[in-house]
Length: 296
Image (cartoon, rainbow, N blue to C red):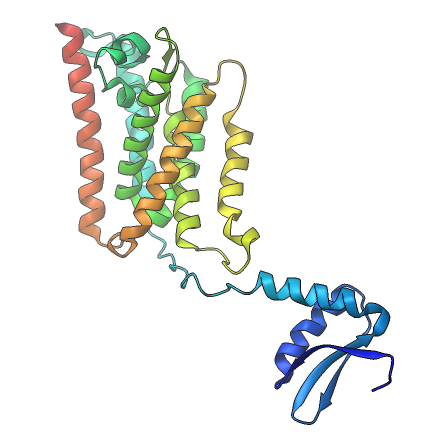
């Protein structure tokens, strides 16, 4: 080794030296790996020594905590089709029943978000409003996005658990959003549930570290991706209820984080069946209360 070369890294095996050498190569810093006795060294010209040491230090800092957070929970992708089919059937069925005024009820008046009535205790409107739509375009839009994000949620959490979580998260989000707004607030539509499904996937994947987990850009990737989709698809025009979309995403994200704690149970068919039955039961009961309340 010439006198104008400086050692910037030393190790008893060649592998770590090779890793550091790749870092220097990517930055265009001339270097060599030299074996000296029982050790290997990475050497550079003196004029590059300070920069090379800094880059190697930065590389080591970035990788210092790799593997210390525990292994990623490996996803067991499940059949999400039943949940998506169920979602489409429910919103289409309610749209039809509301359209014909089934059994003489005003379904829109009974089930829509109403700031004043929710403040007076009509909590079920947070759920029933999810199944009402203002027209065919509104319905088809929520069917499309709901089926897409619901499919992703069902794949990681299972059809039953995913849709029960989406229903509860979006119902809570609707109620909270309504309380935060003026009492004259009115709204309908499944879009809050759509973004709860997106949030669930983002939270589940992030907390479970289903993607590469070694460096921070990979760890926050699911969050960034979810927020980007929320911004792209959930901010719409002046009639878009951005607050409900955002709260739906947040509530869904929280549910995804909670679900990862019971990830080992999500593969059990009885759990999925029970959750799916619970989701249908809760929604039917909400509508029964809503329609009964209208008739009194």
